[in-house]
Image (tube, rainbow, N blue to C red; front, side):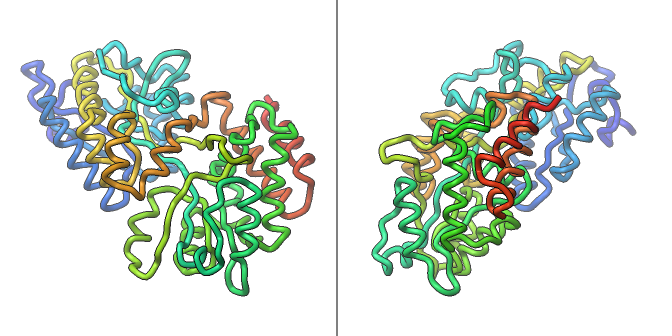
Length: 395
C-alpha cells in the first residue's frame, strides 16, 4: 500500500526486485496552468528515465519550512525544486548533493544563472529557465506625448514627468516592504555600481534618490509603497501608469487586451551605453541526500532531462521565461520578440545570493526598509541606507 500511494521509502513500486520504478518530487507550482504543465513535463522526463514521477506541490510560503522539516527527519523527496535565492540556505544544511557526481551537463549556461545554483564552488541546482525585470511602456501614451523610450535615468525622469497627467502617473514600481520591493530596486542599485555588501555608499544613495525624486515630483504614486508586482501590472493595464517595472510573467495577461499596445525595453541605466544589471528570478532543481543511490541517480536523470535544450525551450514558451542556456535563449528571442529585452538583460543578470550567500535575506530586509523610510520622507536616502547597512551587519 505504501508503494502504491508513494508514501513509502525504498524503491517505490516493484521494490522487491530492487528496481526503482518511481521517484517523488516537491515543488511550489500550485497554480494552474503551471501545475499541470510542470506535471506533464515531469511525467515525460520520468518516462525517459524509466520511472513514474509522483509530484507534490505546496504553496510557496510553505516550501522552505517543509523542506527544513523533511531534512531534519530525513524524509526529503528524490527531486526538489527551490527558488534560486533559497538554494544557499538548504545547501548549507548538507541536505543536497553536488550535481557533478551524476555527470550532468551544465555547459552553455550563462555565468550568473549557474552561480544561482552554486554553493561553495559546487553546483547543487540547475534552472531550466530564469526570469528578470524590464521596463514596460504604453506605446500609444508615449507617442501621444512625443516621448521616446527612456534609456537612462535623466530620460526616465523627464519621460515620467511628461507622461503624468490627472488620473495617470508616468512610472510605477513595486516598492512595498517585502522581498519583492527589494527585488525591483536591485537593477537601479546594481546598475549604478551599488552593492548589497555595503549599502551605505553614495552610489546606493543615488539609486534610491531616483525613486524618491519620481515620487516627490508626482511622476510616481506614493501608493507604490504598498503595491505588489500584480498591483503595478493592474495599474498599467488600466491605463493609470504609462510605464512600469515588471517581469515577463505579465505578458500573457497583457496580450489578452487587444486595445493595449505595449512594448518592453531594458531597465534604464544611470548613463546611456551602460549595461543594466538585473536580478535573476526562477527556480533550480536539486537532488537531495538519500540513502538510496539508485533513487538519486534516477532523480538526476529527470533533472538532466528538464534542463536539456529542447525542454528548456518548451518550458520558456509556456511560462514566458528565458531559457538558461545562452544559445537556446538567443533562439527564443528570435521566435518571441516580446522576450528579447529579457533575454538581453539575463546575459548580465546576477543571482541575489551571489555576494552574500545565506545572508541575502538580511540585505533584502535592509533594502526594503530603506525604501520605505526614504519614500515616506522619514529619512533621507543616505540615512535610510545607513540603517539598512546596520541590518546587514547584524549577527
